[in-house]
Image (cartoon, rainbow, N blue to C red; front, side, top):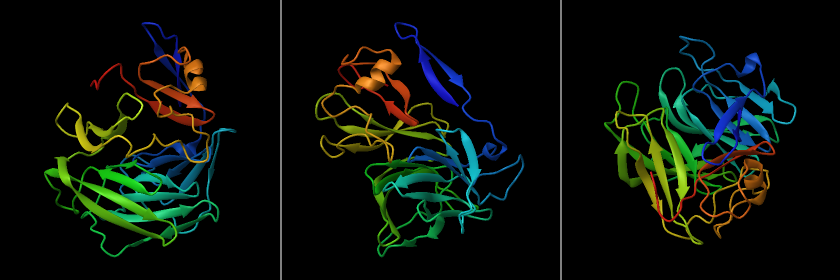
Amino acid sequence: MAAAPRGWAGGSRWTWRPVARDALLARAFHSCTELRGRLYLVGGLLAGGATEPSGDTVVLDLEGDQAVRMGARGGPRRSHHDAVPLGGRWLCAVGGWDGSRRLAAVAALDTERGEWEAWAAAPGSCPPAGLSSHTCTRLSDREVRVAGREGGTRTQRRFGSIYTLRLDPGARTYCYKEEGDHTASRSGHCAALLRGPGPRPAHQLLLFGGCSSAEPEVAGHWSPGTIKRLLPPQGRANCCPPSDGTACQVCEQWAGVPAGASGAAASLVLCGGALCSDVRWRGSYQT
């Protein structure tokens, strides 16, 4: 589905329209990641009551709205995992449930060769006991912040550890580092990397839902200049706002916002098959 705003002044409404219908897309607890204008659906549960995750990979071409099952060898059987793009070439599936246990391992799809690879833990890696229904938020092309439920098959912690995951496609390795902060134990939540106002914005990572608390929780702060800009989707032109506080002219005009207007409300825009999400404030942080 794709969302688009109808109107803007005072009463903006979003309407949804179907962009593809295919039985291959029917699944739950999978990951869906954009890479070079295509959506990659990995794993998940294919039927109600299923406990064995699928190991297939389905590609949805956003230009032709056609879903195709890849013949990639060695696909990981995963559900309740997350996935991130890397270097415009790899798709890294992180953690999840394999049908018998929670994992912290990383499997990577080389989209150029059409093959899955099991990457190895680098020396010094301190992985979580296991991850499921967690979130992976990209901080740079090789660095990911991991937050959410952690534990083994029968146990899980009452709090949630936060990890920085570094990915090395050259060495085919990954490395976890546990951060000092903790959050509530969350699963099935959402994470958003938000930037503050001004020409040199600070950033913070907020977690929403996934536990009994109705309040969002901060899972990381970054001082101005640490994160240069919100990352554009891999293989696409950067249509996210630049660091000088002005917004992308194409995005704003498409959404019905005057080009160059300051302090626009939160917007979610589909630009050329890539999803741009930008949140900006008038003056200070607001929740």
